[in-house]
Length: 246
Length: 273
Image (tube, each protein chain N blue to C red):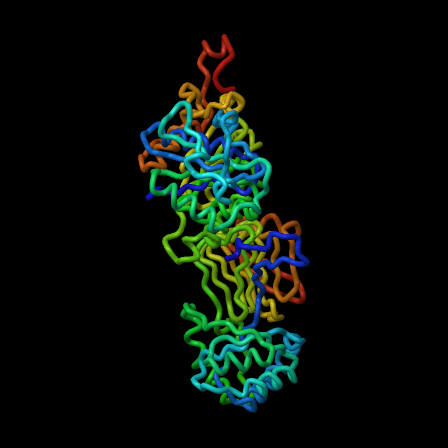
């Protein structure tokens, strides 16, 4: 229970945090196939492979035992840092702990978009070099309702769709594009892993901050004519271009 | 089973305690057995607003730590026999409250009362989180200014994620917006946010609109909840709020500037300016 914290003066306090985290959804437990696919990916997006923490999700695998140590070694060789394992059998959990990794229980409810993923991932795994990713990525997340001040909603892969408003002080992030079907009054960051093709789409622009792949505009920098309009935000020649949606 | 209503806001000084006292009194005057609990341990105020500060012996922290029974700590209101007050401790801090202790107090009160009103402290820390954790409904008190609206938005986020109902995946807390210190003249002048702007951002149902009123300060200093002042605009607005909380459909008043009649203008005084 988050309300129970230590009362005495202590050296630290535990705090709940929501950090964007990349989940590596394994469709195969074969370290060599993972190695082949990673080698292809590293050429596409070298910026992503900089000791990036990842959670290895093994929920899609049926195998009771995994060569977890070798999989981790392959990841580290490609500058990915496995920090935890999600799902899997009891032996998988035990070996994760033995390797100094955390373990998360399987995700209970998953958005429909993710459910279609294993098929694509499996198909992708069979190819030595995966096809280049398009602007609209697989995975992603749909959030229904107002995103309130202090809340952070992120899609660590794919697009984020918010059906509702994003209020001042709230933050929405996505590896792909951010779509807000409502007023955007908070901060919106698209392409957080460096995807320059990502964009931000919203009704009623009043954003505190807009960012695509690290290039940003503050509310002060936004042309006042655009405020209150339905707009799209894209990265063009290292500048954010805001144009009306018609 | 009692209905547990938390009165909260995030920001301080917006009228949480005034509203908690008025709502609790209003519910009791309508014949509901009601208890109002001050969760603001260390900055006890509710007893002053309720005018019972001279009768405090034990408090919420004493009850939670087993030093006193509920019956000993609860103070019966002088004006309404249906209303009880459970004061906070002034000498302790919020860390003296435990989740289990608060739960036990609320469960015990639940058997005897129809409504339990929790007067939350300001902020979003432990005290505020404990006050809202067990709530069935929430009254979010908001002033027509941007910082208050943002803090209310933050509290609404906590209500939907850090409550028992949220953690147990039960129906969410029913959230009500209560706008206080509303001054239609200053709204017209553009000094204050108007009601529609507040409703658009917070996106929850409005339960009441309390006009800025001289009656509120007078009532606080006299220790008589303003709802007893049924001649005042604020008193009437709180009475409307209580009706809506009990499920009645009451038209909204005090939203626009009321033209003062010729006589009132000639003689000045009284009323709203």
